Image (cartoon, rainbow over all chains, first blue to last red; front, top):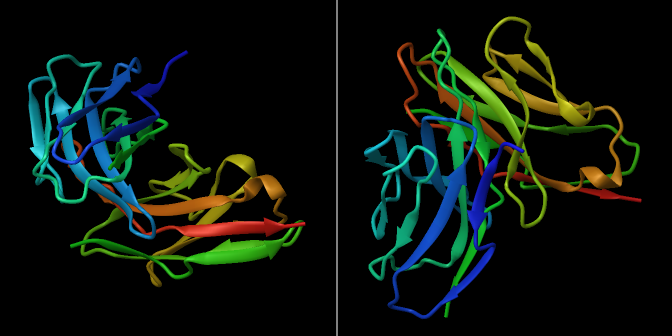
Length: 116
Length: 117
């Protein structure tokens, strides 16, 4: 089955530790995204990557880092510099834009990170 | 800059009643519009999208939405809801960009639909 997988589903870490969240897709999509979701806040874009070995900061990139060494994988590292890391993290990938410039994002099941 | 406003944070409704979830957007250029649904502790699932053409868009699970350019709205409707429709619904907007994705899908803050028996 094609889709997006995120692991683990739940993650607990001590304050001050870096932690890496996994995101893998087998949809052959070029673009991938990381969002953070907090209650009542909607989704906010952390980083996105349109192609391997390239990525751009989103609206709330501070305290996070990413890599894109393979088309299928886009891991997110939550560093100790992120002041409030407890949240639900969602990974997405998107179809290539059509002639009109539209692409559609599809989401993974999410990882809930709790920092103790 | 584009923005999305979902006018109701929570909508309680009885089973088999109709429902409308409201979404307004702001943008200086033409946009694409999306509705996503999120069940508890899960990712987002695409319900429907408006790209161009007919302003009435039909999606999965019996939902539909109507694009109104003059009112900059994209309200989501269902004529008869089920208990299983209980979830959070997100409206999102993306500006048209001829030449590739901007990676910039802007989400509203969500509306929690609670269907009661």
